[in-house]
Length: 192
Image (tube, rainbow, N blue to C red; front, side, top):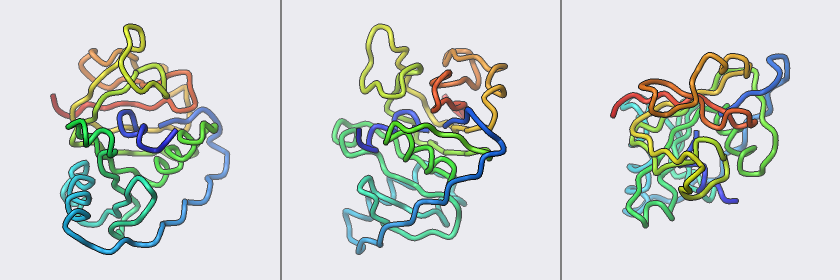
């Protein structure tokens, strides 16, 4: 499965083990791609997921792993996946290093654990995701599909921290997405 599919949920975040486990090394950045008009639009889309102060310093990477703009912070922003952009859907995201590791694990269907909190921003909203199935690609009558407006996504090192939160996206506040999987994370809506 391609990295394009993480944006609807993520896109953004999990935990499930060991505060004591050593963190994996960050993934090396790909070489930068030369600037151009189309690239500028992709960068603007990616940065629309971020706070203005974050957008000033975040790196931008495309879905092929090319660095479109170097950054000076610990955040990497990614544009709306091409298949969603073509459908008129907006779902860019900005992820910290913990979330980037999460995304690589999710893409490869590998277990993920962290000893640190992870934060991802999707301030432009998302195109939708199943609240229960990390790999669902479209709504079905029973996969609890949810389209979220502007939100943050949080990863926590101890899955027990998620027990006090609901899984219902319509509860009026934060909720757990993909509970019971190694990709569980907290969705924090910040606007309607």
